[in-house]
Amino acid sequence: MNVACNRVTSRVGSLVLTRAVSMSCCRLKDDFQDLIHPKGREPGIPLYVEREGENANLKRARLTYQSRKRGMLENGLLLSTFAKKYLNTFDDNQLRLYDKLINLPSNDWDIFYWATGVKPTPPEFDNEVMNLLKKHVQNDDRQARIMQPDL
Image (cartoon, rainbow, N blue to C red):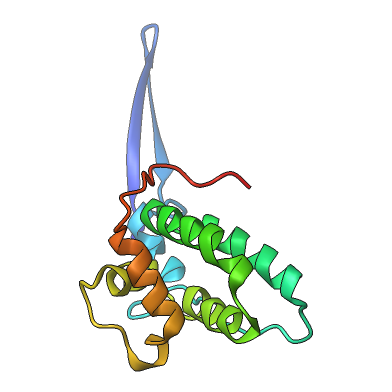
């Protein structure tokens, strides 16, 4: 922390006033960077915990919401239209796979890159649900996907 002392001169009528102003309690914005994001550490993301005892209807409702409310618009559009098309037909195992797919990766760009084929899908996510998502992303029937489907 820098300690500085400045002299401030003001003029009031014919009088010239000079006073010392201590700057010891002033900090610059950058002085707090290490407190906000310590070097080499990013803010933590809560770990994914599979929900036990959640019935299929509640899980579908939660996954529909999570498919719509993503960190990026591209995934919001892709996953919400995918969920609208497939979630009601998924069995318990497929719902579990989809839940892990959209909640385990900490970066939405990873999901986007895997689904669009830009990056290879890691083995733990390379399953029937990911294959359906990749087919959905190809959009062979040329559906307009410029907004999320109605609930």
